[in-house]
Every structure is written in C-alpha cells, then in structure tokens.
Image (cartoon, rainbow, N blue to C red; front, top):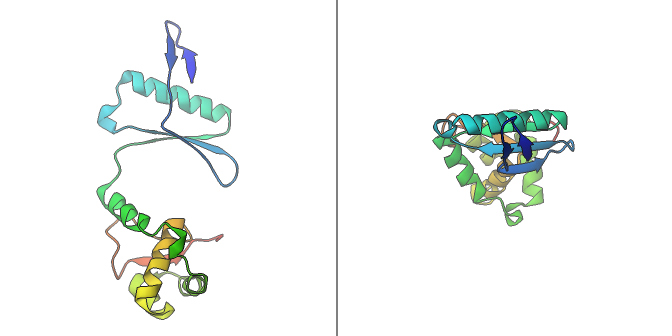
Length: 149
C-alpha cells in the first residue's frame, strides 16, 4: 500500500492476506509488541483504515504464546488428508457433539492408534476444537465439535 502522510511518501506491505469463508478479506501483520516503533504503528493504523474502507479485517499479531504454538505444531503433523478416515471421522463427530475429554472420546470412537490421527486432523482442520492456549493437549483436554460444521 502506498500513501502520502503530508510530508513524505510512505508504503507498507502486510505479511498476509487471507480470504475468509464469508468472502471478506483479512490482512495480517506480524510484529512483536516491543518491535513496533512510531513508523510501524502509523503503518498499521493506516492499513487498518484502508481495510475498514473495504469491509476487511485487519489484525496485528504479536509474539505467539508458547503453549499455543506447541499445540499448533503438534496438530500440524496431522494436517495431511492421509490422516483422514471418513468412517472414523463420522464417529468422532458423533462422540464430540458435546464437549468430552480427549481420551474418553477416543476410546468411545475405537482403537486409539487408528482414531488419534483422525482426531488431530479434524482439530487441525477446525472441525473439532479444544483450548489450545491454556495448556498442552493431554488426555483430559476437553474436545468439542465446532458449531456449523
């Protein structure tokens, strides 16, 4: 994006642009809080105003939380479609219709060696969810089916 601030020409290239499911856009800039100087803050403010004019969202993400990142890295191992088995996925959607502890739901769905990769794939895909920020995923982490899925 290029603009003139009244005294000089300015420009800024955001880090990411994503299209949301509803068709709107989201612009994302990633910068740790302690790395945002006055010029960066002005760029982010200008980018946010431009996004509002287009009915897009603007997000500035700081340093990610370590627990959240560890959980996301874990789930990313299961992002490939080869982890998806349709019959098991259907069973998991039934089991986690209401919030259930992870291990309890896995046992209800079948053999854990076969079920866990499917569970983690569905979590990576956003079909199933858990609190990824509070603590590392474990047997007692509560998992639920996301509404509208």
